[in-house]
Structures are given as C-alpha cells and as structure tokens.
Length: 478
Ligand SMILES: C[C@H](N)C(=O)N[C@@H](Cc1c[nH]cn1)C(=O)O
Ligand SMILES: [Zn+2]
Ligand SMILES: [Zn+2]
Image (cartoon, rainbow, N blue to C red; front, side, top):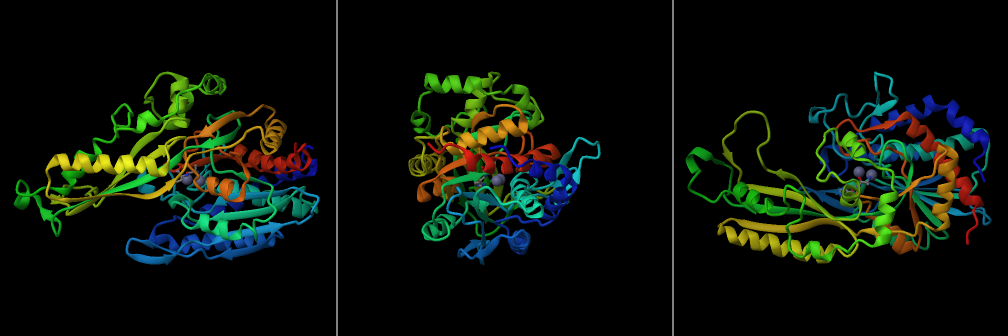
C-alpha cells in the first residue's frame, strides 16, 4: 500500500520546518565518551523527550548505569524509549537510532562550525554539521513522519516503538543488558526492526543493507619513565615508550592494507560464485569512492576488489596515539606513557574472541622482540560481532517497495563496512529480522570533517521511512 498522498504532500510543504528541527539537534554537541560534553549528551536526550512528547508519543528516559571516562565515573547517557499505537491488528515496528555524535572541532579542518547546521552557500542543498547524517538526520526523519501524521490527523499504519541511545559511537555500553532486561516488557510483541544509521554506497542509488562488519577496538599502552622527560638530557639513555609503540604499531598493517597479524587472513571465508555475482551487480564505480574520499588513493583499481575490501573483508586501521605531542611548535619531550589506538573491522568467521587472541599474542611477541625494559599492555576496549540478515524477509520486501515508490528505482542490496554492534543484540536477543535502511549518501562524510546530509536525502528519507511503514502494514507476511 503506497503512503497516504497527504503525508507525502505534508513532507514537501514542510521542508523548512524539518530542516529547522535538524538545526536544533545539530546545535547540541552531544559527543559521547568525553567529560566536556556529558551535559550536552543529556540535553540531547531531553530534546528528544520533549519533541516526542509533543508528537503524542509515550516517552521514558531510562538510566542504564555508569561508566568511567578517564578516571571519572559518570552516568551513561539514558536510553530514550517511546511508543505510539497498540492496535493488535497492526504490525509492531521497532525503530532504533542514536543521538550521540563523534567529536568535531572547527580546527580539525571544518569549513564551518561543526555544531551549527550550515546550508551550502553555493546552493547545492547540502546541510553541513556534525551528526547531520550520523545519526541525527535519520532520527529527525522519524520525528518528521510523526509530525506529519499528527498534524494531518492520520493514524500511523503500524504500532511504533522507538529506542534511541547516546553511546553508539563508544560501544553502546550496557545497551545489550537493557535489551535483555526489557525483552518481555517494552520490547514484547515487536515483529520487525528498522535501523537508519548507515549510508548509500554512491551518491545516487538508494540501498537496503543486510550486513555489517563488526569491530574490535584495541589500545596498546606503553609505560616507561615516571614522568615526561627532556630529550636532550635523557635521549640516548633510556628505552622510549613512543619508539616502542611505533615499532609495534608498524607491524600491524602494511601500507597496501594487508593485515599482518598471523592467522587473520586464513580465517576469511573464500568468495563464492554467488557472492561474486552479487558484488558485480552493485552500482558502484571507483569515482564514487574517490569522490567520497576527496582523493584518488584507492588500494586497488578494481571495483569489485574495492567493494569487497569495504564490505566482506576485514581491515585494520591505526587511529591515534594518546599522550603524544601533537600541537604546533617543537616541544622536545619524551612522553612517559603513550597509548596507541587501532581497530579491526570483523567479518564472518572473525569474531571478537578469536581475533583478540591472535592480536594480543602477536603484539606481545613483537614487543618482546624489541628487548625493551618498558611495560606494554594490549587490550580490547570494545567489540561488536559481524552480522548478516535475511534480505528476502517481508521487512526487506516492504522497504524495497517503498524505495521504488519514493526514488523511482530499485535499491542495491549492500553490506555496510561500518559497525552498529547493537544490531546483533536486537537480532539475537529479541529474535528479530533487522532492516538497515540508509537515508544519507556515500559521500556524506560521517565521522569526518564537513559531515553533511543533502536536503533531498533528508526530505526523501523522511518520505521513505513513512512509505516503508505503509508497505510494512500491507505486505504479505509469508
Ligand atoms: C555505521 C554507524 N553509523 C557508525 O558510525 N558506527 C561506528 C560504531 C563505533 C564503534 N566504535 C566506535 N564507533 C563505526 O562503525 O565506527
Ligand atoms: Zn551512527
Ligand atoms: Zn558513527
């Protein structure tokens, strides 16, 4: 059943209001995992509570315990849950999104203040701001759908439950426990789930995503002297933590992207003919990835190899070194302790545990080879397993129809290179088919400088989420 035409018209007529809603959300710098922004993350939860309440949703803010940021114990951001409708004849749809964002500073290289939603002055329709696509745009999309129905006096075609968290960018701590504890309470009766927290592959082809890579995030801590030292006075006399750390980190991945940890490559499942055919069908060109990256630096010149590198093979990325000198100027310090950070994107057969066993042993062996008197510790900070869903389920068929209605074209079926670890918890704990229904484009720059969402994706995305509900209500469930 196509969406109510009044709904589609309302969305077209209220674009400016919807952009204003996103503007308000982006202005709250809800960076998770950072002491300086704890209050902002709480404010963002409160913003959602107010908005949802005014849209007729029964809302609750649930505490889910506390965690340490550095040495300070603070409350975890609350989970915001809401529900609207409980007609036993309707499908029960659960929607998830996150209201926290990645860090962003203007001096990282943003053209505009990352926490002011800024329309492209050249009129391209791009709306720049941290969280515009990851994940405030899609979350506001659901609120827009509710607003349209409320203002038009239309009943929703499904019963809707919503769960919004504020720790997705930092491992979704305790959300699995919350899901398990609410399995027979808030989540009781849910039929299917939809998550809009990933992106199209390119800039023009909508897609439905049925897989995610997992993630293991590691820290390597190297400690030596009791305090930072003068490199003129002590250089050449002691084992330096940074030198040890760089030596070990340089052994993790080659410049051509090959993971050097022994045993990992061997675990990757061989490509089947069916899989090869699926990858060859996807609309994608090297120009798409070059456009998104802003440079011609792909590891391979072959499209399918590049796609597989992103979706079905593991990758290891080096992220940073805490404790290292990075400011302008020429400070001649020997840092006393440094923490190297890296992550591995996981794929089927490469799980949290077997990968960690290989990584820890290898890092310790490589450190031992250095003969250093410093201390090294390597540990997993958070992990999420890889996930694959059944794309033939009625949940996907409904989204397929909605995509054709809104965009006039068939969606690609993709697997996401990024990770949404909680997807697996929802799928396994609640036994649900989960649909990943992206709103933004492949060049949106999530996590990057100048993150944006195109107005057309935000507005058509709102229509898509609404149309999906209508299709879900009408689709043959067999
Ligand atoms: C795909 C999703 N929007 C996302 O960005 N997920 C993050 C999750 C994460 C895990 N550790 C830190 N962040 C990602 O894939 O990096
Ligand atoms: Zn996200
Ligand atoms: Zn993210």
